Image (cartoon, rainbow, N blue to C red; front, top):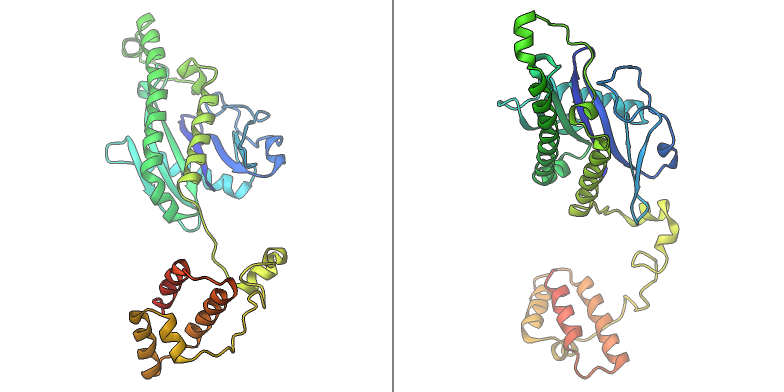
Length: 320
């Protein structure tokens, strides 16, 4: 699936930012290039600029997870998606999924959720999962499946963070400490690894995001219908021995067949349709062409029982 799935968060020092993203590629350089990250902050750091998580499919598709996308323009779109998904394009209940569209910056499905943090403002941190793609209709068709899995990911992260939160609160209640001391300096945001106490949390996310991309590609596939001239221009080899090749059919288009022979060959209902077309002036040259092909095939192969041939022919002739 041609899309980018990212995890974003709100940093007290740097605002909304993408933390982690997964995308499909066929470029091996994307598995070795360093991520470009100008912010040195524990909360805004996930894998690190030198780390890339890679999975390979049997068909050659490469799934890469990094801190940022190698393409600078797409990285800007992802940054804008992070800002909009956490600040303005939000659900009325503050937590939940939203779909918004932009022909210039891409179409986005986002899910915002909160994670408990004893050292954060309000004892909670805001995160969002975004799916960015250029195909609006594909995104709408995949929204039910993607939304369900995004909710499962958010609940998994919340459950891990809740355990850490309860453990820290049992040692020292941050709410009571803040009321007593009036402390409002929260410092740098903690990383997701610290919030969940799971060093493999980004490997889990890589697995989840890869599954979403693979399942989305299997659910809906894109088929390109184009003309003979364009196919011949793009890849001439694909035109060999196909229906687009000239003179591939050896039957003579200018062959003749009598009406009486047609009456013997066709069923009564089909012959009446053909006769009506002739009498009313409808062009039946294409129909005669198919009749000649079938007639010659029957004669050449000596078919006595030609039910299969005529079943196919009836389907063709009724389309005219």
